[in-house]
Amino acid sequence: MTRGQSALSGGGMIRTNGYYCWKPRPLNVWVAIAPHNPLQEYVLAQIRERLEAGGCLFVDPPDTPTMLGPVAHLGMGFSPSFDAEILPTDFLTMLPKPRGMGLVISTIDHLPDEDPFDTARGLLVRKSGHVGFLVEGDPAGTSISRVLWASMAGNYQLLTGSEDDIFDSVVLRIQAHVGAQHLTGHEGDESSRLTWDQWCASPIHREMADTGRALGAVGYIEDEVPLGKYGTSNQVRGVLRFLNRSALGEGMRSQLDVNLRVMGVTTTGGGKIELSADPNDGQIVPVGRMTPAGYVRALPDGCPITFNAPSVETHENGMVYVAGWLTRAGLVDSFDSFLDYLEDHFSRYETIEVLPDGAQPKVLSIEHFHRQPAAGSITRPDLIEIVHPDPERFPPIDLPCGVRESELMLLSALFQSEAFRSAGPLDGVVVAMLPGHGVVAVTDLPRPQMTELLVNGMCMEDVVRV
Image 1 (cartoon, helix red, strand yellow):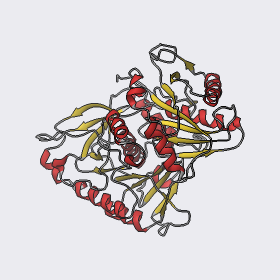
Image 2 (image 1 turned 30 degrees about the horizontal axis):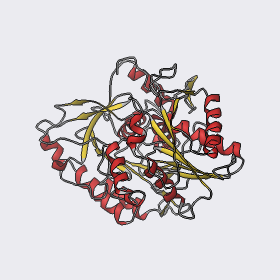
Image 3 (image 1 turned 30 degrees about the vertical axis):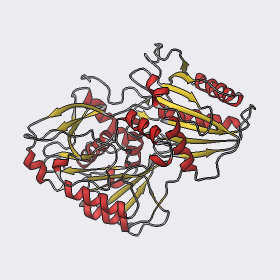
C-alpha cells in the first residue's frame, strides 16, 4: 500500500457526492464444474443472464484477463447429486491466485425435511463451497419451486415466490459475497511500542478468557464448528487443509489496553471458549495500527513466541476503535464524515493508530457472536442500546466475515447510536444487529460488566435469517 491509496479502494465501494451506498460489483466468472442435468443447465442459463446484465464476464480458462481483473473472481461448481462430495482439490484449488470464491449448486426433487441450517451448512461442507444454493425441482425439467441459499457466515434463507424473484435474489447474494473486498492483510510489524513483560501484565488476557467461558456456559458461542456431522472425515480434513486451519470457530473478541495503546484480538479458527489467559500461548494478538486494507501488529520487545493470525475481523474491530476515539474527540459525528476523515488521512499517511497518544477511547471492548437478542428481552435499557445497519445504504442480506462491506455495514449501524456518534462516552453497551449473521457488541464499560449484561441483561435466540 502506498500513500494516496483510497481507504475505500476496490470492492464495489461507491460514494456519490460523499455519500456511501453499497452496490453490486461486476465479476469475472468461471464455470469450473459443468451442469449434470437439464435443471442445472436451466439454472446456469438464468444465473448467467442476470450476472451478465450486471456487467459480469464469463471466462474460460479462469486465468483469462478482462477489464474486470486478471483472473476469475468466482468459480461455479455443479454437483452431480445432493450427497456427493467435492474436494477443494477438485474445484477451489483450480482457481488461480489471487484466488476467488467458490459457488456450489446442487439440485434435488424435494428439499430435505430437516433443519435448514444443517442442510445449508452440509451443502457447503460436502461441496467445498464458500457460498451455494440447493434448488428444488425435477432434475429432468426446466422449472424450480424453491431455493435454499447458504453462506459460510452461517446464514441461510429459503427463497420462494416467482422464479424471477428467486433468481434475482440469488444473484444479488452472489455478488454481495464474491464481490466483497477482503481486509485480512498482515501489513507489517511495529516494535518498541511495548515490552513482553508489559504485554504479559495486561488485564485483557484474563478478562477476555473469562468472557469466553461465560458465553460458552450459556451457549452463546461454540469452541469450534462441528464440521464432522456434515461430511466424511476425508472431506472435512480437505476443507480444513484448504483453509489452513485446524478448526473453524464461532465469533471473536477484542479489547483495548489504553495504557499500552494496543488492541488484543483473538486468533482465527476455534478456541473461543477455552481461550487461554496465558500470554505465552499466543491466543491473543497485539495490534496497534490499521492500514486501508489490513493491520500492523505491535510485537512486544523480547517476545519469545510466534503469534498465529488474528481474526479475519481484526480490521473491522480496529476501525471501530478508531471511529470511537474520533467521535470522542469531536472530529467526526456521522458515518460519512468518518469515511471523509479516512479518505483524507490515508491520502497522507500509510497507517492510523488504534489509539493515538493522548486520545480518549470511546470503545474499550468488542464482542462478536452468532446469536441475537430476542425482541423485548432487554432488562437494562438504560445500559443496552440495539442498533441496525442503515437500510438506505445496505440491502437486508448477509455479508462475508472480514470484508470491507461487512465492516461498513457494522459502522453504519453504530453511527445510528447518538451515544456512539456524539463526543461523550458511551456509558453502556451498543449492540449492532447484523442481518443473517449475529451481533457485534461494543462498550466502554469494564469487560466483566459487559459480559454480565450480555449473559443476564437480555435473552439470546437464533439469528433471524435473511
